[in-house]
Image 1: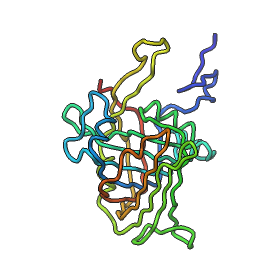
Image 2 (image 1 turned 30 degrees about the vertical axis):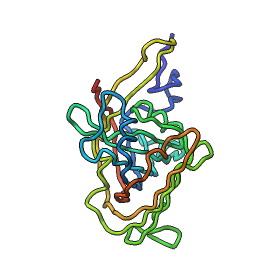
Image 3 (image 1 turned 180 degrees about the vertical axis):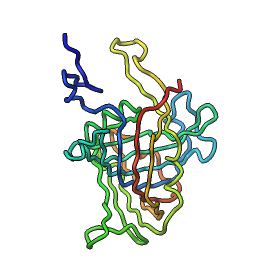
Image 4 (image 1 turned 90 degrees about the vertical axis):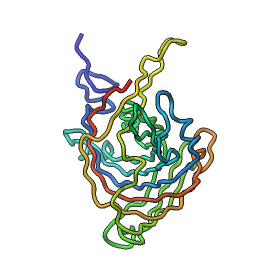
Length: 262
């Protein structure tokens, strides 16, 4: 029989139908980040063994809206934009493992199937959602400027229900884009066994991060963030107890694998 090809299903004789191409994957996008503090116990209950809460500021949370354009090494997706462009909203906390502090994505929603597939490979708990954020533009009155007073809105919905909304007002340039999402990621890759009652077919803790990174100037400001209840989501349990700051930054990232921790 002829071999079948493709990084992920569906595998075919050519591999052209695979949902995602092989890494490396390259991303360019606009990030809108809102950081705040919640009850540390709510963060701790989202950290499975062997992870522990971060030793400093264990209740810190970042909600990040991202408007991405992405491609493989061939860059062919950029000329077929439906394969390159997507939006996501993800929730990051910090944790500790083997004496080191990590970032960890505990919730994430995206609006394209190929983004969900990449997340399954990387250990991100991606689900389908509806994500929107204001885009900046240097001309006209149809967009805010990346400048003091620039105002950006962002919304997240899933299963026809709004989960979060934010309004960010830029104030001044910043040396950082926040601290919650500033560490290597500690994620679990998990696949249940096909046989009921058997151990998982895949259950590993992995570390991953950017193979390459570049970014434009970061801006900080203030945010009005609201979270909403849903019968199928638990984001609202990470209640906003104390605002920290909001940020805007344009970034470029390359992802090319990670390493197994356990």
